[in-house]
Length: 203
Image 1 (cartoon, rainbow, N blue to C red):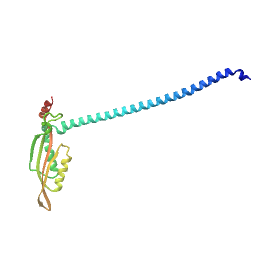
Image 2 (cartoon, helix red, strand yellow):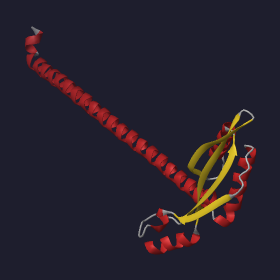
Image 3 (cartoon, rainbow, N blue to C red):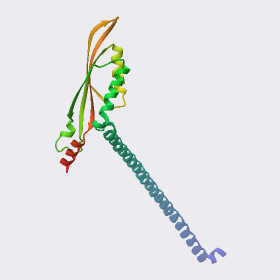
Image 4 (cartoon, rainbow, N blue to C red):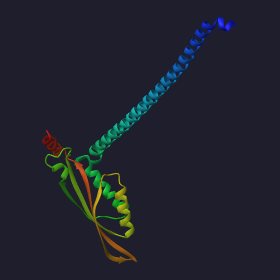
């Protein structure tokens, strides 16, 4: 028969077909493995890129927050605290205005002044030169007037702190209790002399 006559050729062709089949499947498996490896590397690279972008965004946000804090501190130090020559008269006028808005008239004001601890701490880094000024006064009026005065002081745009309060009943006038309020306010002023001394100690 013809297949017997061509047996050698058929065997050779069969071997070639088998070799091609084995090579095809082997190459396919290796190709798929390489594709999977590339996909895995791509996913890892994408994850690293996402982490780097997240870290960069976080760093930018932290830098922006730091710059904002610096700006706010500079505004607080230069404008809100300022120096006594620049702000003391304004502050006194503000206290008088708030008292008048509460229908209260302090007969007099007492002032105290002193250096803050942060300015006098020897060798302390980042210390700033500031002077604390206290304003104390006494008023008499109704409870509503006292409450309004305290509320106005707390809402004031001036940098002022209620440092102490004492309240006592005085008398009854027209059915209303007249109260005596002793209030002590405190604020900070920038002291260029103390700031220069603190800077010299750090050099």
